Length: 438
Image 1 (cartoon, one colour):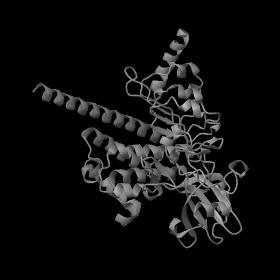
Image 2 (cartoon, helix red, strand yellow):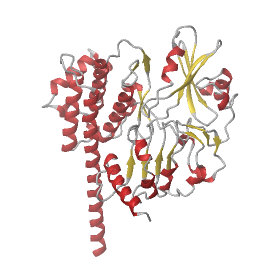
Image 3 (cartoon, helix red, strand yellow):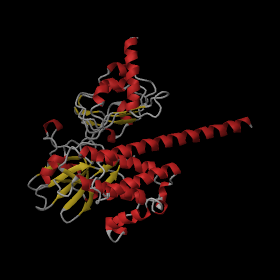
Image 4 (tube, rainbow, N blue to C red):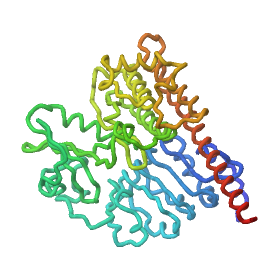
């Protein structure tokens, strides 16, 4: 054993534990969480000696959304005890080291989606049969024997679909695949060659002259909190946009449901939205819609911004912050501004200001079931929402400030939830021991 490497590995583990925001780095190190951190992630991947002596306490590794552009980082697979691995939303290419996955017998969650691996059929490999097609969306890996498209991937122009490909994906544009219809757009659900479900919007007439040019910008966006635009069809007979298909419901439906929706869950959704907004700061020409009906939720409550507008004159930074403020308030109050207030958003904001801060119990959504600690957090969040929507202020809060405030609140909420879980577990253990002593 190389003691020098072990020592360096221990130092790196300490830094990485803190970087991943594990709650107690002295006693445990359960997760490497470097998602959405493209400056730091490649650095840690370069420390071969760390992965060689990977701490056995690590059960999950998340390196998603880092724009990693390389072959598969095979050193990560030396952590053979892990239960979850997320490498999605990167630019990884080349062959996936299929044989190196075999020792990962505890792996139950795998996400290699949204990469550029060499096309490979993995349906005959026993190890990968435990995962469904959602683990390999748009990755180049083929988890089952889907029908081929009309052009092999290596010969197909990137992001361009032909009418024949869309016809094959929708079973001949069948009525069963038709999900919606308006005056100028037909919306189909389709299935591509690699098993990925997609939404296909087919446009009729000449009402969307800039459609394809906008698509050429949107296909470059790649973030886990944005609905991915996969490509377009620009044929004389057919114009279409192809995006990923999202199962589940939108945020408005989730809020209006009858189930308990805790503050911590809402905070997690808001953090995802803020992450997506921070990413889009790099694309000032891309505007977006933050209405609850336009934010889609995955089955694990990961939010996706779904509606975009290129070079929208009304999408200034101050306007984006105002829209986020309205979203934040709506998440806490669970009232629909346009439907329930005569003056729309202005009336909605005025209604909350009337009750802030003394009478917030009258306006906060009771389905959050707040404790005293989480009520204080929700109160601070409402204050933040009112700051974002205050047009009279000369110094509107910045997105960076919002990110810092929301991050601290979310980490605090996770710690509270962890302590409550540990206390409940301890109380149950004491009760069990008392029963045994009887």
